[in-house]
Image (cartoon, rainbow, N blue to C red; front, top):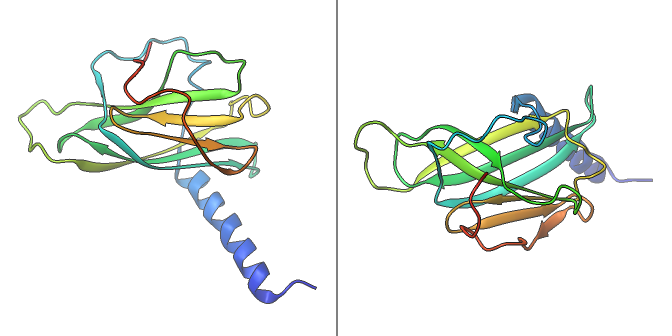
Length: 160
């Protein structure tokens, strides 16, 4: 028989993943969207945390939550954009980008958060999710349910 504490931890984990999915902005899987990446979106400075989960609420959905650092205050339209790469190796890599402020802004790292849900992601094909910025990268293995090393150096490849 499981202890009440074990059930409490399990319920807490399920609740956390469910709230991540419900708060996330639903978007089209970037590799299904044929629109080019907006060249005005700048690569952010650093990725601090990456959380990835598959939720089974209504439709199985890939949820990605990223905490990153913009180089200045005032960045807008912060989003994940796809990187060039093979779609058959199971590694789906994103850049974290945003629109620079139009007015002069303080040169201070500014935290930003992105919460995205992809209901049309090819869940059977996604083994690892990577998110890149200029200085850092974070990667998460869905198979092993743990953080793993990124396959490229940060800043080594630009978005298409």
